[in-house]
Structures are given as structure tokens and as C-alpha cells.
Figure 1 (cartoon, rainbow, N blue to C red):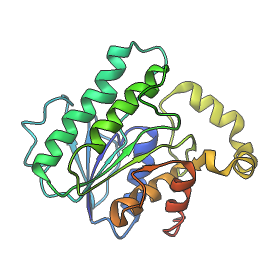
Figure 2 (tube, rainbow, N blue to C red):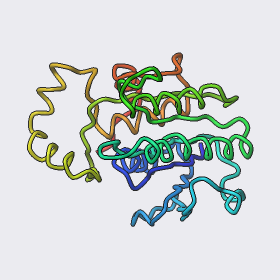
Figure 3 (cartoon, rainbow, N blue to C red):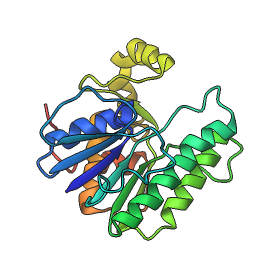
Amino acid sequence: MKVILFGATGMIGEGALIECLEDDAVDAVLAVVRRPSGREHPKLTELIHQDFLDYSGAEAQLTGYDACLYCLGISAGGMSESDYRRITYDFTVAAADTLLRLNPSMRMCFISGAGTDVSSRQMWARVKGEAEQYLLAQPWGAVHMFRPAGILPQKGVVSGVRSYRVMYKLLGWAFPLFKALAPNQLCTSVELGRALIHVALAGHPEPILEGADINAAGALTQPRP
């Protein structure tokens, strides 16, 4: 499987990238990024691209892939709805339209979030829901929304949000306890990355994967050290 990955310099995308590079089922990864990730691997190619609304100059590099892991996103904290919509909805639509035209049978795995709902009063949940609806309405080979709740970064992955980094540092020790008490509300970056790969390869009976579905899919491949 050849994969296009968006968001490789963010916490979720970096976790997915690590799992892709370690998984023998993934032959090649094209990471679409604004800045180099600093990671080198024989399977990894980076497409440095600045305008996430226009891919007209990069279509040759985006052709010939089997699946897209769309992990690009941002915290809505402190953002206006228009700015958040531009990144969460407009960027997603631009990438989806381009990739589907170039790779008509492509499979799409999109990172959303627990609580996403197009009718929600919460701005982030509503905008995420609109992005989900757009993707689900397109003629992908397969399309799946991933709605993780709490995520614990592993294998050196670090959140780009300072408040999250502080929380992980202070409460990371309690993660096993939290996971035992609420297993469907928590996953690791490893479990989420493995779930993305498994679903991109084998599909899933549900178009929307909540916490329990993500953990179950992640457990279907062997963890790496």
C-alpha cells in the first residue's frame, strides 16, 4: 500500500507516520507538509507545499497512491470560526477534491474527534461534522472517520499544543489507570496509527469509528517496540 499522509508534523500525524514506516504492509509514504519533518527513511518522501487550498503544481507527486491518512488539524482554542473553518473544512475539501480526481479508487481515513456533530453548538464539533459529511458523500474506494477522544503520545511523539504537553507530563503516569477505568475513551498514538493503517488496508464495517472501534482495529496488527 502506498499512502499519502497529511499532518505528519503534528502529534497524531507523526504517530501515524512512525507506524507506517515500521509496517511492512506500507510500501511508501508521501508526507504533505509545510516544513520538513526532520525524519529520514527509505519509504518516506516529503512534499513541501505551502498552499493547502491549491495543489495544481503538485499533481504529479500526488498521483498513484492507494490511501490517504488525513491527520491535519488544529486546536480550536482561541480561534475564530472563519480561521478554524479554513483549516478544518476548506483544506480538507481542497485535498479531497484533488486526490479523488487523481486517484479515483483511493481510500480515505480522516481524523475527526469524539463529540463531532454537525448540529452541535460547539463550533469545532460543528465544523468537523461538516468536513465529515463532505468526505462521506464523495465516491472514495472506502472512507472512514476516526473520532478519538484522549490520546497519549508514545515513541517520542510530542504534542504541538503547550497545554497538552503539560497535561501529558503531569498525568502521563496515570494513563494506565484512566485506560482501565474508561478504555473506550483513551488510546495511544501507536494504537491510533495502527488502526489507521489496518482500516486503510482492510476496511471497516462502519464509516465512523469511535473510541472502542479504534482500539479494536489497532489491536488487529502487532505492536512494534
